[in-house]
Length: 110
Length: 116
Image (cartoon, rainbow over all chains, first blue to last red; front, side):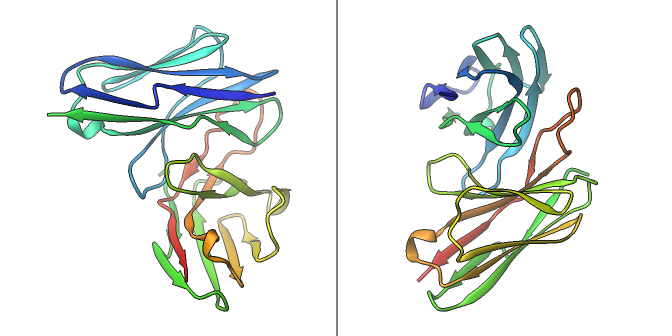
């Protein structure tokens, strides 16, 4: 069964304390892996798409990486405004549907 | 421009009311989606339109009726909803999937629906 698991469920960091969020997946044929950021009561904001193992993408303090089994979202020297829920979703085969992880709630304390 | 616009932002409706949610995008995307999201859960797919035709209906109750009048607009008509239908309703759009092209979905800010 296709599955996407994110860990940890919640992560509290001090401002400037770097860390990583994990998204592990089991799908028969990965078409794309997507990272989104979601603030409370708002729609998910697109961050990155990764298509193949070894691919990396960066945006400001965020860097996403992909292997054949998992993706990491590395956050370097985070700021309080990086606090949000980070969602990972996987697109499999020719399906439009996204298989979503449950998200990691990230809290950055000043 | 990666904007998907949803109206209204908030909606309170009684169980006998009829209302509609609206979504608009001008990115030239030919796939549009309705999602439902409950608190602390990921989005749950309801409907997918591809080239203005309904391609996926995730066994959604008939009290939710989608409509795609043209390539930029997507509506969700609501009738006889139940309190458990209260949720954040999200519209999204993407390019139609072609291998090698970006198929990421861009989401609107959602409509917070409360059924009383």
